[in-house]
Amino acid sequence: METDIIANIKIIRQRIAAAAARCNRSPDSVKLLAVTKTVAPHIVEQAIKAGITACGENYVQEARDKITLIKEKVQWHMIGYLQTNKAKYVVNLFDYIHSVDRLELAREIDRRAGIIGRKINILMEVNISGEPSKSGIEASEAIELIKNISALENLSVQGLMTMAPYSDNPENSRPYFAALKDLQQKIIQEGIAGIQMNELSMGMTDDFEIAIEEGATIVRIGRAIFGERNPSKPIV
Amino acid sequence: MPITSSHKFILASASPRRQAMLRSAGLNFKIMPPHINEDYLAGESPRQHVKRLSQEKALVISRQHQDAWVLGADTIVVIDGVILGKPKNRRQAKMMLEKLSGREHKVFTGFTIARTQSRVCAAGVVQSAVKFKTISPDEMNWYIDCDEPYDKAGGYAIQGKGAYFIQSIRGSYTNVIGLPLCEVLETLKKLKAISFR
Image 1 (spheres, rainbow over the protein chains, first blue to last red):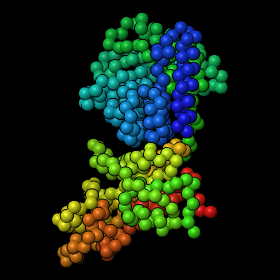
Image 2 (spheres, rainbow over the protein chains, first blue to last red; image 1 turned 90 degrees about the vertical axis):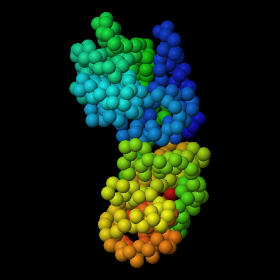
Image 3 (cartoon, chains in turn green, yellow; image 1 turned 120 degrees about the horizontal axis):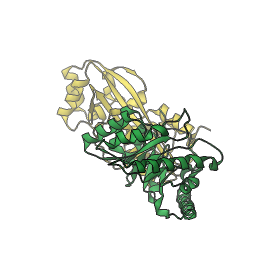
Image 4 (cartoon, helix red, strand yellow; image 1 turned 60 degrees about the horizontal axis):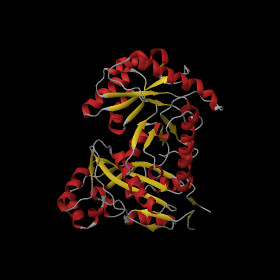
């Protein structure tokens, strides 16, 4: 099993490098974020030993349990939907929050970060496909939200995040990734003070190569590293 | 009839009570007590604490013995939101009995079953409520004079002389001794770590 993880990470890195090369990008311009939800702590440690430097979690409770158990140093990213009342935990646990999609949440993270004297990197989650079931701010409202967030002094906006709609053909994700890149360019042209707009978190196991071709700087990979999720969730 | 485990089985605990219970169930296992820091983390609830410690214990051993099933556990006694540890001397043992006398308290055990090879780290917490009778001063002195209270969380042993103090229990009895046997075996079976054939 351990050798699987090492081999899987190596293959993913090669695929990232190849996709980057296709569009004349350096492989270092794409960060591999290992999605570790439902992965046991000692298994996450194996991935870190195999060179993973950033891990993504989807649930605050699971992340709280896991992060204290993991002895290896790694950057933690919150990538799942975040309830406002969980902000008090995330400011202690995470280095990046990818799922900021409303002002109320941003304000609460800012307030909590201020209390503990920490500056939190955030990405704004955009519902680029407009599917009603998805979280994320509508693309048409993104600029206004980011202007409001830019005033919050304990948050450091780094870029945008999106999820493409589910499809069995990765090519179908391409227009959504391209649309997020367009939105990034629009935001940059707005010249909003106090924010960075370098990061695009998009693309997962099935479509990360397409995402890289469209400008992704962070790809979120779970299944291709850890295999199919173990359905036996922790019990009791 | 013994219970068979699919791989080597390790109990990551020095507790003789846990060892005896697992043995009585018919499981063959090795004993490897891990050394971990058992301090409380700021803001941790009793439930979170026992769960985390049981995970820490199981993982320490599981990292070293990747093919084995490893069971870790941690038990605490809680009354009025205060956690009672193991009494170090007669004075502490007496203070604990005075707290518990005539009232109900809670016992939490966190347990974790880990196996690195199959990427499993399943954790659970079981809670029981224990009602003590009112303990008279001479009964208290009698109890703290024997060596029973001193290596037990909460300062009493339900399976020993301490049974005299216990009017009733709600929940798992084996949990109060230190390992909720039903829940642990059930989980091991679900994970296909053990079989009864």
